[in-house]
Image 1 (cartoon, helix red, strand yellow):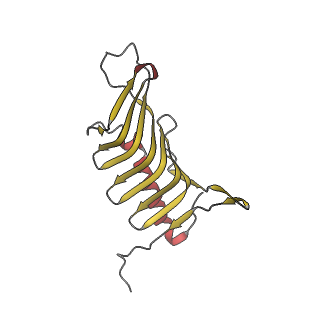
Image 2 (cartoon, helix red, strand yellow):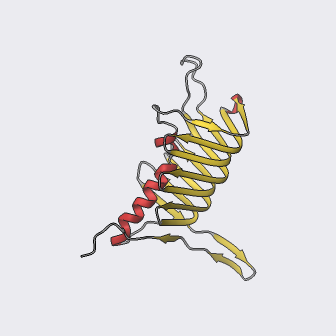
Length: 184
């Protein structure tokens, strides 16, 4: 969904873009070389044959001011390049977070049941009752997809089944005008 709200457009786009950008693990979280990524979990499983590492149980990952909390986080790496020295860091291909996903940075918050980040496609998807807040501004839908290179986001609605058939939930947005503007 694209937003074409004139006075509130900038505020809403700022809330979505800056918020979902923070979800963009590749642009900030995984490729920020100057700050370490700290991950804590109840359990970690390294799967060399799958080029992945799985963190399970009370996962808490942070880098700088960005924090991700989830039940499970799987990080997939590019396969080893035999030309590169052993022990050198590999690039992240994708990251999948499942269960009670919560991403924060300062006054921005994003939640959902799942988050997928795809490095090559430069795309982040927050699934399942996806919501983002920046201050008092909020956007929600079934999924929120952000295309990093295009600086474009889409929010899709959910379809639920009731006793009377299928019902289309609607995308929701709450936009609070800037409270710091002086009244004239």
